[in-house]
Image 1: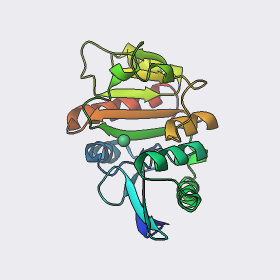
Image 2 (image 1 turned 135 degrees about the vertical axis):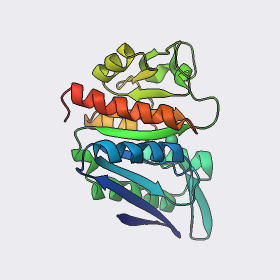
Image 3 (image 1 turned 90 degrees about the vertical axis):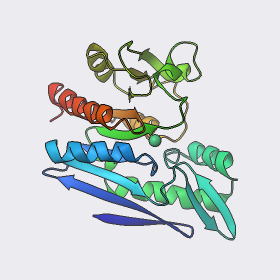
Image 4 (image 1 turned 60 degrees about the horizontal axis):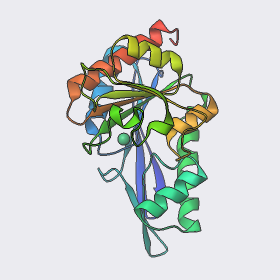
Length: 235
Ligand SMILES: [Zn+2]
């Protein structure tokens, strides 16, 4: 199942993979994070659910032309006006017309899949740059102010970690000795990302970050997420 969204002169497709049932919903928004999609699909075949994958250029950023100008943005920074302004400025330049175009994409995407009605959202990502890890959130590190708590296990790869908005997820995953970050939902930077968007909506959100190519680790992390949701009464 595929639905196309038009942004300027570019098409962004959302491809849905579904098996047995339509929950839980797993989402992938970065087109270069293919290990995460693979892990999601393997999990889907075993446990059921749906996975919504964004497909455009194979790159992280979406690039489009509008009125003869080229723009780029990060598709996980478009779920607030502040986020859209910042991502346009960071990756290209700002214009009101480009802002409007991106905002209608973000709105249409959320609406098409009725994501605001989900009981819980699982996001699938890969860490790719060799710097972003669970250690980015420990006290004194660059993103510490976004986190209410962070647990780095001595037994895990620091690039494989969970990022969650709900303390019961944090406690569960920490007890199972996984790397996990609890977002500080009151103080987190409003960057237009889905973790901030869903926390504002009161929808529990679990982001699974695994180092690119660490397929087996990510399969395990998706599996543990399903076990956790079951244990905590989500399905
Ligand atoms: Zn990502």
